[in-house]
Length: 192
Length: 192
DNA sequence: CCGAAACCTGAACTGAGTACAAGTTCTTAC
DNA sequence: GTAAGAACTTGTACTCAGTTCAGGTTTCGG
Image (cartoon, rainbow over all chains, first blue to last red; front, side, top):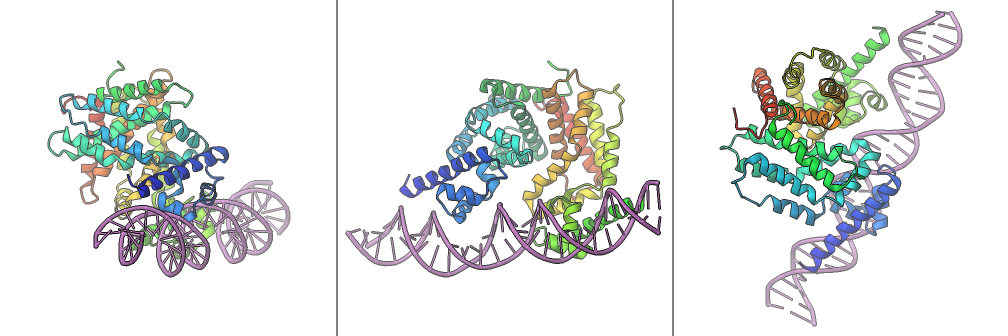
């Protein structure tokens, strides 16, 4: 990794951590992009070259975490049934977030309307995940692929939103597993 | 309904239809709130007293449609199993949208990032729907309630997003029913 | 018909996001 | 090592969404 790339990542992290500090101190609305940029020692223009919006600085994933995330999708073992593999995948994904999640949840607690933005975080790897699912599904059934994707996502989000930052992280992982299992088994069925 | 209320609804509809006309002519980004207000014969300030944001004018439901929507939730017959009732409910809900949906889809086609806003449309009755589900579920299991809600919503959205405005509307209703059924039966199960 | 409440309006403001030209820092190829 | 050029940063200036508010107009209840 050349100097340029290292500097870029460093700047990204400086801006991000500055932003999260200010936001958790004063609340999302009470912090302007100008405040963040000034405190992080860059110009407003530079801020927007790193983050496309003020929301992004609060919710975008760290490039390294994103890479780990994507790496999970490389696993191509198709001997496990789809939904079980999917459940494991989501649990593994959740495992990458023990630092990230509590912060996000506290921000959202103050500004509930940011939930929409937070959900959009997933968009960055949604295409990859969809491809992962499509690979394990009979030939090119787009509707079915999308349905599996959206439903699994819904189950995952349900677990995340039910989790309180004060609960243990293992509890979240259990809930993620439960939600995915329930959804996979069919919510029309009686509770097992 | 007094004069005041009638005028208000009329103004709402004038602003809305003006907005949709301009947006479908020029595209969402190329139309400013000022344009819409001017063309609709009201001030910018008034515009924002009717709609909280520029996005809202494109996606908010007509108050009357919203009322019909809510009316569907009044039905309290609990003899039908939860998921079947839910499937019927969503199909009935979809039936109220034959005018609305094609327009929304065309707007989103031009500005894909508006999908998030469109999904947020559901927020206006989400609490009611959640209560509807909770009523039919064993005592206050919040997680399960939310899971059912989110999953059903995901299935519904999948159907809506797969539907093309040129397809017949009945096809949408069929797809909604299919998606809900599949999700209810369990996506971990083989296709039936 | 009169007073109160609801409504509309213009003006002025904040802050997000964009465009661009000029300056600075890193890279690469020689 | 250095020079040409690519990539990055910055200030300025702009557009437009969304808010606030004071003052005027319309509707409503009695």
